[in-house]
Image 1 (tube, rainbow, N blue to C red):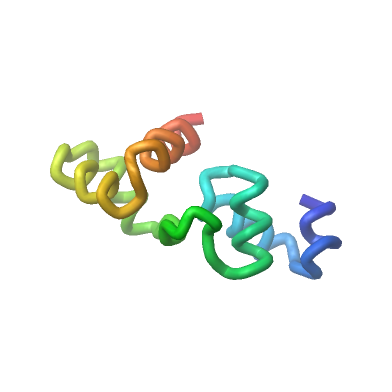
Image 2 (cartoon, rainbow, N blue to C red; image 1 turned 90 degrees about the horizontal axis):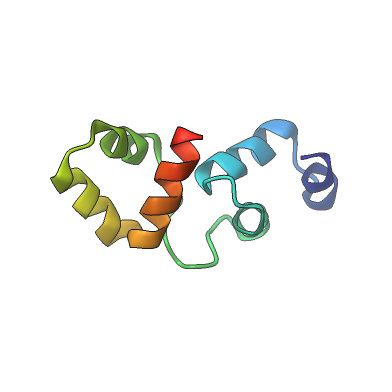
Length: 82
């Protein structure tokens, strides 16, 4: 976290948010801090998306897989349950 704070001139809150919005992936968090976007073109995870994912409804999960891709949803589930 300190390295990212120094590298991007960001405070702890901004670095923590970048990690949270990118499922804890360092490369994606760095891209987010650098550009405000993910390198894979997917949107950043939102609180509502997390709520939908945690609801466990199949329709909600299908919508999230369409929005983020199956692999990103799988990673997000792993991140949220770790």
